[in-house]
Amino acid sequence: MLYRAAQHYLASCEKTSVWLGELCAFRALTPAGYVKSFLERHHAVVLETLLQRRRAVRFYGRMMEENSREHLDTDNEAGGEDALVGNVNKLMVTPPGYTGPPKKGHIIFDACFESGNLGRVDYISEFEFDLFIRPDTCNPRFRVWFNFTVENVRETQRVIFNIVNFSKTKSLYRDGMSPVVKSTSRPKWQRLPAKNVYYYRCPDHRRNYVMSFAFCFDREDDVYQFAYCYPYTYSRLQHYLASLERRNLDYLQREQLGLSVYNTLNDLQRWRREGGNEEKESRMRLQQLGLQ
Image 1 (cartoon, rainbow, N blue to C red):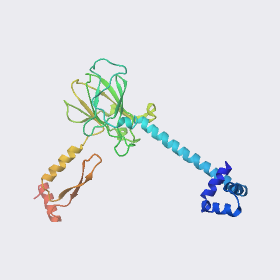
Image 2 (cartoon, one colour):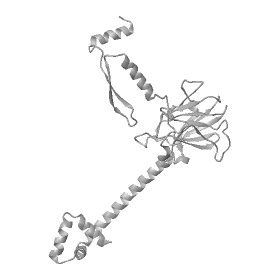
Image 3 (cartoon, rainbow, N blue to C red):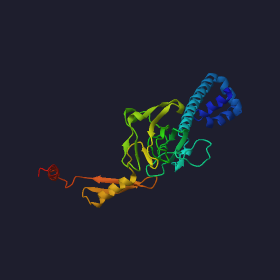
Image 4 (cartoon, rainbow, N blue to C red):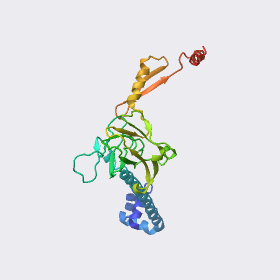
């Protein structure tokens, strides 16, 4: 062990690898003989070098182990990054081992629509489901947004949905915020009662934060949609910007800044004061207030 450490020490010294051959030829020693001679004269130095290398190996070994464990925990909690590459598409969740025809109450989950996000659903019981959301496109550690629909429900069916792989330790859900819901017969978004929403550390999910909410379906033919908060889709934004562009406003200029990873347009908007003078701006304010 000390012999190998002496070799590493000599190789790490400045110009040692170049001089070694010349010194061996000058002293008529083989490289192995020179290393042995060096080891006899500098035993303490080589021993300290060996101890430093061992400390470094243990330190970096612990770091790699912790990083690997953290990455493994993240992948397990997220259901595996490979398992969450796409949204669920009309996924009917039935009890394990069930092979009969679909029944009312066998909920169908779907997130294959704009701004949708739901990567996996685990059946816990007839009344409880664990939901895994997909991570952000450019950062797999960020998992916050969810938006999905359910159908094929039974009237008066009560369920608990657990979003089990949130990445945030702090959330407005702890301060009274609640998810939003709408249905085909009630198309306006409404917030769930805060008393039915719980944000907590869950021992069953590696003590990660979980958001659970209870809900009771009241109409069998409705499709229900749940979201983190009020969705604002990319299409809606583009429609609004196009309506501004059609008005030919002098103080608005819209340009293409670039394309996203999904080849969608990234807009650059330049806004300036209309007319470019304070007098005209003041006059407009007076007109808006009905004073002129």
